[in-house]
Image 1: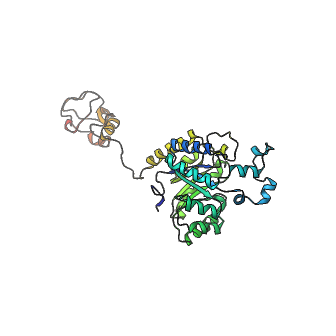
Image 2: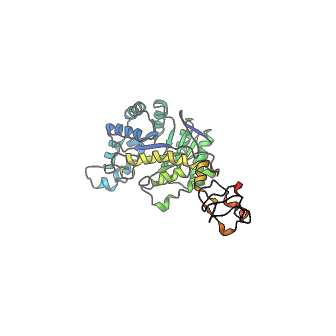
Image 3: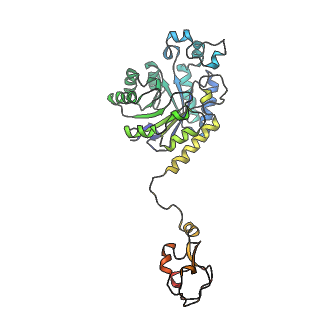
Length: 351
């Protein structure tokens, strides 16, 4: 199945991948940094920049703020920050999102965001005119929210981290039952980062067998090897966290791709997709190259006109411009029609 993800991009399994630079909260609340990230993503070849639409009220409950439950070790080492401080600082207001949408359009790169509430989804669709809606892995089992999103009648990009297969299946059916079949499923492991043994990229093939929809990959691994491998598995959308500096203070910088790494992913995706081809096995080399590299039947010694050619009188050497090796036995016992020098390619008229 082909899904028109944006007005200019149709995605399907094994197509040239649509690369999403996941900025999320890596702007650290600084819109100038966000603009630098957008420019860098465009320069290295990403198709889209994606943010996250949440606020203090829509991401955590009050008790979580009291316990500072989601503070990472980086934050815990700084006693001047609470979880509530971080959320307030990193949240993207509607005004900031609109500013980033306009800036992305100016730069020439697609803009998207992940909403965390119905109101944020409304703003994303109605005001920002997002081409698609990205559903975070944490909402795979949030079926009321999935219904609300599905009824927006936009393509739905569904990440599948944190989920068992039956939960993914129910999420897909929930969206379908609302009349929306414009679904892209992103295989995902939501550990930050996951171990290689837990990644199991063959699950991309499993999802492709189970569902008619395009299958992509949302990546939280270190570096660029795994997303490139996912592309070789046919992933049509690849989402990768993006930063300008892995050492910055923030939630996702350490597991994010730098511009150099994302450039490798973007350039590699095009090469890999082109190299995958059709699966039809046929000779791709030119006739001239085949002749240069293959062997012909040649004389192993001087042979006089009228002599009977024996097995020890011939050999197989490059180039392949004469009689092919498959006729080796046919040559034996034949009579030479002219004098032949050693190492001379034997042609049909010579015997």
